Image (cartoon, rainbow, N blue to C red; front, top):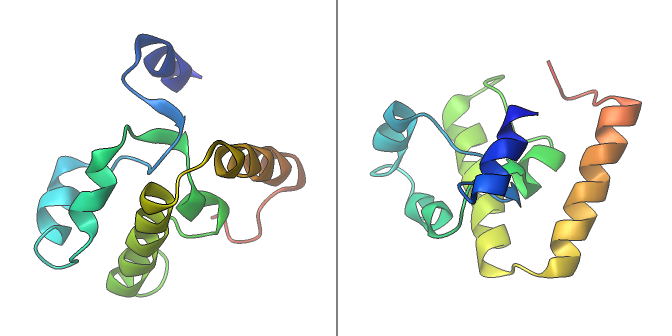
Length: 103
């Protein structure tokens, strides 16, 4: 809930790439070509990567991060209001039903 205060202040969006810690940003920027694209939009409370199960640190972190960045890049490049609505509904659905990929 505190993140909604950041949305009201204009520092975050409801939907967008989830922010990473600065150390994570510094580590992956030189390794993943599209990594910086995600910083072209405000970070979000939820995002395409999250509702697609691409979060956390299970498995191979490099592969997981590349998939997450691919989803974030797709979101930034193809943004639409209807995509935001779908992501919001998927988020609500996953909160209510539970997500088997969450740990």
